[in-house]
Image (tube, rainbow, N blue to C red; front, side):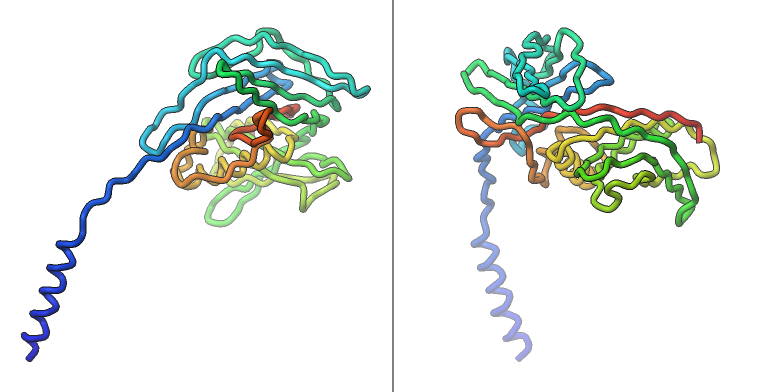
Length: 275
C-alpha cells in the first residue's frame, strides 16, 4: 500500500517540473536625472554632478555633458543675485565653478541646471546656517573593547539643526548623520562615534556641517544603503539594489517634479587632535 501512495506522488512531481519554464527578467528601466551639488566654505567652489541613473543590469553612471549651471543667492534685503554661471566640466558629468565663492551666513543659495534638450532643474532656496564649531573631542572605553569618541559642540537653541559629521581615524573614514531632536539647545551637545583605538594614540580629523533637512535625509538614505553594501559609501549606492527612497530638494522647473539628488550649502567646522 505504501508503494501505491508513493507512485502518484512521483508522477505529480514529474508533471510539475515539466510545467516550469524560465521567465526572462524584463528591463523596463527609464533613466532618471541625478543632480548632486554643494557649496561649502572650506572649498569655496560650487561643485555639481549631473548624471543619469542606470538600470539594474548596468554598473556605471552616465555623466551628462554640456550642461549649463548657474548659482544664485538671495540676501537679507530679498535681492536675488546671479553669483556665477562659469563652470568647468571635469568629466563624467562633474562640474566646478571657475572662480571661488565666499558664501555669506544667513543668505539663501540655489542652483539651476539647463540641459541641452531644454530641460531646466532648480534646487530650492537653501539658507546658509551659521558655523557650529567642534569644541572638543573625548574618548572612553565602551563594551567589547570598543572606544566611544564624543564630538562636543554647542547646539543653537530654538532651531531644528541637522549635522553631517565626517571623521578620519588615521586612515579609517566614518560618516554620521544626526539631528538635534534629543540635545536641542544644549551647550555641551555631542555626537558619539564608535571605533577601536582606545589602547593607542590615533590622529582624529573631524569635519562637521550644519546642513538643511534635505541633505540630512540624503545622507541617512546613503548610509542605509551603505549598510547593505559591506560599508561602501558613495553616491552611486543610491541606485544599487535594494534601492532607497531618496528625498531631494531639486525639481524639474516646468513640471515641479522632484528628481534624485540634493544641493547642499554649509559651513564646515574642523577639529584635528591626537587622542
